[in-house]
Every structure is written in structure tokens, then in C-alpha cells.
Image (tube, rainbow, N blue to C red; front, side):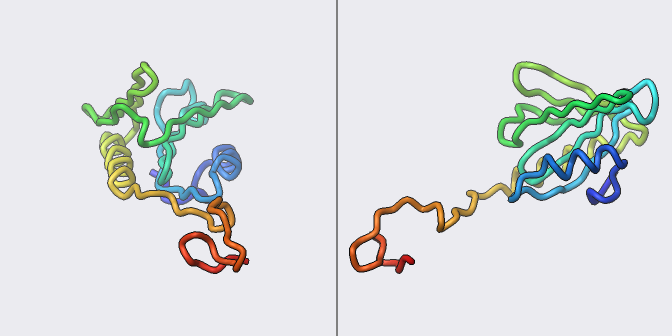
Length: 141
């Protein structure tokens, strides 16, 4: 398990830095044992908003993911992580049998902590009155 982006393998770390949205926070990650070689594997990354799958095979890489609120199922079965979304089911094994449970726990914690996204006052489209206040009475610039 990886507890920070800086601990991820170099190629995954490089991809992650460009994948995280401005308001998104890395939570944890793990490397599945689905590759022919250790370095050719799927890396499952949990953020506070999404579950990302970063697959590295040779010189190629691909990224897919799903928002946590659109993940239909996420469960651990005998050390294997089972994911269901977009009409597909995926299974990922890990060297450590407890890793699947830890990923599920991280996803569930983020789903439980999910709150309404903060609004940016600069993007608020409420009409202003002529005296420099919006319709709620707050001053505007």
C-alpha cells in the first residue's frame, strides 16, 4: 500500500501528478498482481473523489477510473478486490491478502465523508443589484 503520491513507482507517480484535479486529494494506492512482470501491473489509486486504475505494460500506459459515487460495488473476497461499474466487473489480486480489504475500507471512508463540493464565489452567478450587493445581501466586488 502507498500512503502518498511520492511513494508510488516513478511512472505511476508521474501520471498521477497530471491526473489529480485541483480539488482532489490522494488517499491511498496499491499495486495489483495482474501483470506478467511486477512492473507491468495495474495500480489502483483511491482519491477523495475517484478510484483510478493506472495500467502499465511495457512502454505503454492507460488510465481509467470511476467517481466513487458511480461505483456500483467494491468488495473484498478472499484477498481479491471486486469492482463493478459501467456494466462490467473487475477483479484484482494482491501480494498481501489484506490489501483488498484496505482498498475497500478507503473507498467506503471517502464515500462516507463525501460532502457537497465547495462553491467558488468567483463562479457564483447570482445577479448583482446596483448597490454592489447580490440578492442575498452579500457585498460583491
